[in-house]
Image (cartoon, rainbow, N blue to C red):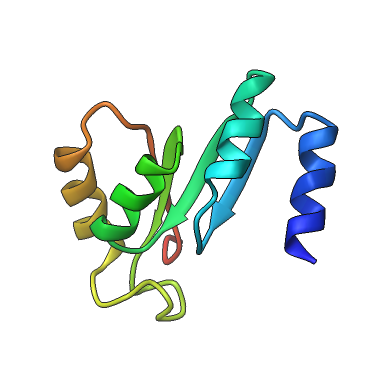
Length: 98
């Protein structure tokens, strides 16, 4: 399952872990212990805050254009909102871009 896959990646000291959905503080703690980074995929500012509280180093935001799993807000609006709310956090734009 997903937990076992993450454990293998951490054992191999993968330099960048991408997580989404759920609390990933144990992944962030383990990755940070060897110098790894955590990129958390989020769809709302609330999810972004939770991801940062759990130890994410950067955010990958995806809006409504990503097959509608990105919530109600479009990516470009979400990116601007997040960059203003979390100015020190790197943000990766994903979903709905051609």
